[in-house]
Image (cartoon, rainbow over the protein chains, first blue to last red):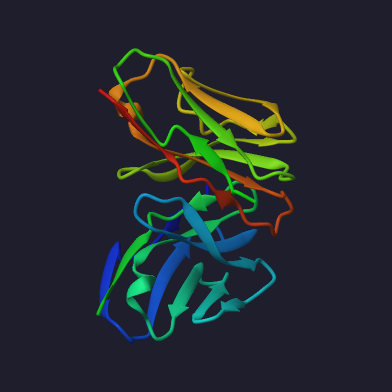
Length: 109
Length: 114
C-alpha cells in the first residue's frame, strides 16, 4: 500500500528566498506524482503533474522533480512571495490519489 | 466554466440526523471523486465514479455512508445516521479521466456533527 509523507509539516521563510518542499513515497511503482496548493477554506488547485516516465515539470517559478529510485519528489519555489503562502500537498496515483499530509508554507514580507 | 460546485458550503447537524452533501462536476468530465479531509487523517478518497458508475468505494468508512451519481451532472454523499466523528471537510472533484489528467476540486463542505 502506497504511503506518502511530507516533512516538515510547516515552514516559514522570508520573502524572496528560494525554497524546496519535500515529498516521499514508499512504492516506487508510481503512476503520476502531483503537487497541489490549498488555501485556507478552499479546495485544492493542481500545480504540476509529473508522469511516471518524466523527471520534472516546470511552471513559472515552480519546478517539480521526481526520483522514483529514491522515492522522492521535490517542489522548488523560486523567489518566494507572500502570495505563495498556502498548504502544499503532494499526491501519487492516477485516478485513485494517495495524499501526503501537506506542508504549510508561510512567506514573511 | 463555473468549476466543481458543492452545496451546502457549511452544514451543522446533530448526531443521528441524516446529512446529504451535493456535487455538480465540471461538464464533460467522466470521473467524479469524493474526499474527506480531517486534521488527523489528512485527505482521504472515499469513493469515485466513472461515467456515473461507482468504481472504487473501498474508502467509504462504514455502511452509514452512501454515494450515488444518478446522472453526469450530479452526485450526492449521504451519511445516515451522522456521528460527531464524521465532522470534516468533504470535497468533490472531477476529471476527464485519462491517467495524466488532473482532478479539479470543489470548495468543499464543512460538516459539523454535534
